[in-house]
Length: 324
Image (cartoon, rainbow, N blue to C red; front, side, top):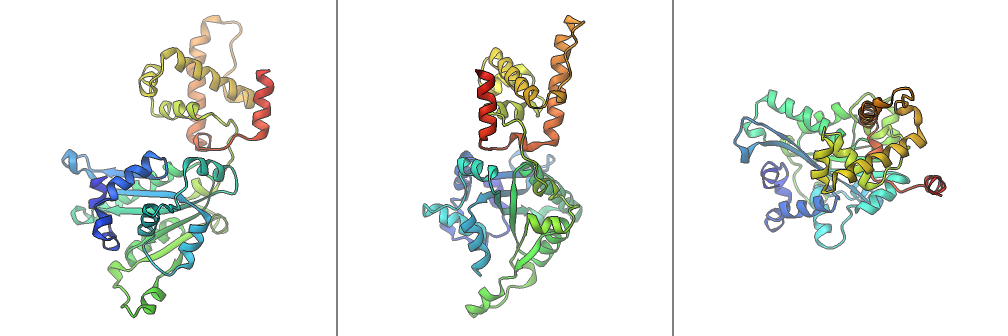
């Protein structure tokens, strides 16, 4: 977290007493599953100085989303941190994310998207920007997102943001500076607010990285959190033995969890998994490998199955009847 704090673009927005606390505050939010972070590393640099770009985001309340667009003051990340320290955090907890993701949808604010531009070539900046954007989509794909806000801190930053993701400019904050008799910041450090709603995105006919965020498909299987945890690790290529170590459960518990997952999938969408070969009893192990392969391939295309959602009443009744 300290490495990320070093390359922040908007340090000037924070008081020193808050700036020094940011890494610990970020850790608190991460531990509570209330903030998402992606980083880009340069492996040619020393191990303690490899992070060249990072992004962080959070899901926030409807009220804060309205305030962010009606209040003329810039620097949303600073405002989020201040409210968090005052015990009035607008950042959603995991249960609140689960409810919103199962209901009307989530508001997403990009808190940081920064690069260590001082030591990077233009080619490196383009490379890091591409991977940071891909990381953002990978982290948030599958959530039921209804609106995104992001701040840019220069005209060049704004141009790249709007061009690559179809964001709309919400404010240049000029009223904030004029009302206080302050000069408008120069182009290289001028803050802007940009954003886009799901409806605005659909009106643009898609075609950007944001497709994976706004073209939402509800989950079919409603995996339980511990099943989602196993599947997320399996998507990284972990074997059953490695899953046992990562999840701190026995190998037999891993196999039992897989069995429960397959039962759930076969009850909802039996055609997704390969059928059993009744004439070849020795094919069981091969079928197990094929089932995992088919399921993981599906999950890579449908990340919504691994996002926090509330169990629907229909799904509850369905599983209760099978258990009975």
